[in-house]
Image (cartoon, rainbow, N blue to C red; front, side):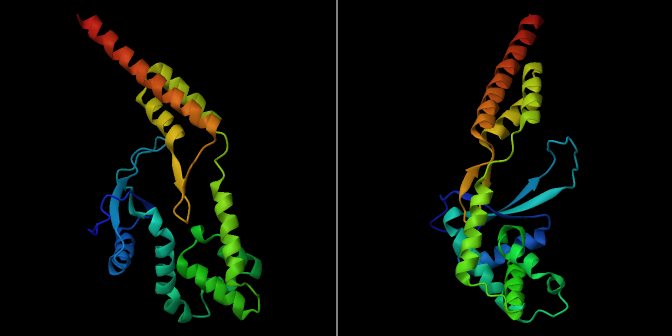
Length: 224
């Protein structure tokens, strides 16, 4: 992590990679521009599907939420020259105008290079997409991403079941439903689930804790 006066600033996930080389490449760019960052290795051992792969790891690059827009611009400038040198046989040249427009409206789903190249191809084809239009599309995308996930009724039922049975998984499910957040491309963080699901998550979490403590106490009493 780069050291500096902003060490106490909370750092949140900017990008996640499954290749450490890609994470280090981004870290190098951040280092050059004096951006405070941290690279973390995350194991994906636990997931709701109960599938465990000990070799599966993600590498998360975290920065301050205040730096998101600045870093977006830095990466955009970094890729500008690469875009100008891109060959005409690049796969994006096979996209229709509608597909390219959809691409530039969802920058969070594509690399900065792809976004810039799509914009360039549209201009070459005479499609008038101004920076103001892209800004509007991006704002609309932000509003879409702010919307919470659909009701998690299945996981709520599973959570209550594990909570009553004294399973530790109930604690994880409850905490996740209650506290999970998603980070938007502009650095803003919003809760992932609707208020009702979050409320159920809190109940599942505390119920799981109470049941686990009760089981622990009963076991102690039974051994005496």
